[in-house]
Image (cartoon, rainbow, N blue to C red):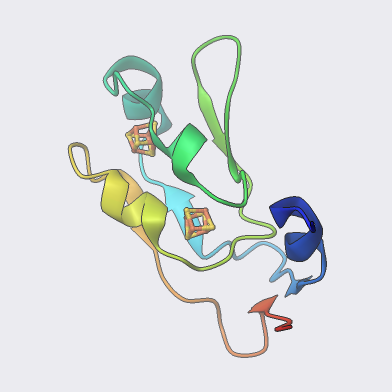
Length: 95
Ligand code: SF4
Ligand code: SF4
């Protein structure tokens, strides 16, 4: 059986250097006000990482553009999200 990680590895991703399409608006809100930090467990691509000091780091390379993080950050609305510019972002490989 093929694992999800192996399937994800088959996708290709073009990074738009310096112009991430997902951003955390206020990192301090993640660190001090968000009790559940659900983005760190809900992102299927593992773009959000919880650091030892309680801060959340977002690296959007490899983002699947599923929109989950924007939806689940419902209490604080702390995620800025837009589709990448044309030619950048995820290139799904099906099959
Ligand atoms: S769910 Fe939203 S507020 Fe909470 S850690 Fe993630 S991005 Fe920050
Ligand atoms: S859009 Fe989906 S894959 Fe991209 S960072 Fe948000 S949850 Fe992760």
